[in-house]
Image (cartoon, rainbow, N blue to C red):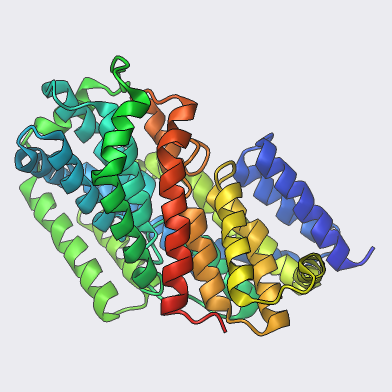
Length: 426
């Protein structure tokens, strides 16, 4: 059997395992890479080169900075400021929280940021009878998701997409490639969340009794306790400012900036190596590395071309770039509701790149649109890790669909509108 067919069969096996979650995602990715090597689709050095890829190091470094922010109390300081500014007003607390977390998620790992913010939500709702956990947790998680989609390092899907595009077509997104359309989508989210979405959310979960978020007293106390190491706190904020300045003015390449920030956090005692080992989301790191390996094998074997030819045949006479762009982004948004968004990208991006090559479309806008579509899925708790984490607030499965369907529709229409404005499809 030829390598290109074998590559597709292995990819099919991985997709089934991703969908069923019979194995953890990272284990499935490793299995796929190992099969690519054992069956001769590509070499060991090529398939497992993802573990030394700069994008994997970039992800791990941003996670370390997020861990350091919570360890030093920087995240809690911000939380206490939000509580003061809101003055017991739930909608004001939501507005300030969405803006702050959305902007912070542009530079910090989403899951780490939400992990730091959940105790803040729990603390303010425990001390105030006018604030409800369900009215805040899911919208703030969505704010982190939309804000994080605005930069290369905001969350995992962008890094996965960038790695796939680099491996398959030799192009890469910069730190700010997604910022234009991403911020437009974030603005649409804020309008939704603070107007119709806020009123509608209270109808969705109604007056169901509040549920304990399962946090320990120590985590709640960390939000209200002002006892922090001021030296480490100042150092942490200096590191954050330097990191953002380096990103903004391209003082160093993106990955080097993130690695320097992470190393400074360790060197100045903002977080310990033992904390990093315990709290770093290793499954995401391994999963990304194996995704890059699968993409490398599929490209080398020519499997991507076969996929593109099959989809082109299915599309028939349809050659409009906007129609094909709309179909692929809608497909991504739909399947991202049920599988991890990075997995959805593995399925759709090779198809998109093959079609771009066949029809002469630009790869970058297709990559940006499909990545954004994967990043904003929020209609089920399976859509993304940060959406799954909101279940601690006691949401029912149907709550996500009732709250998220219109938000996803608005996001999809926004992608169709804004991405071609920033990146011509042809």
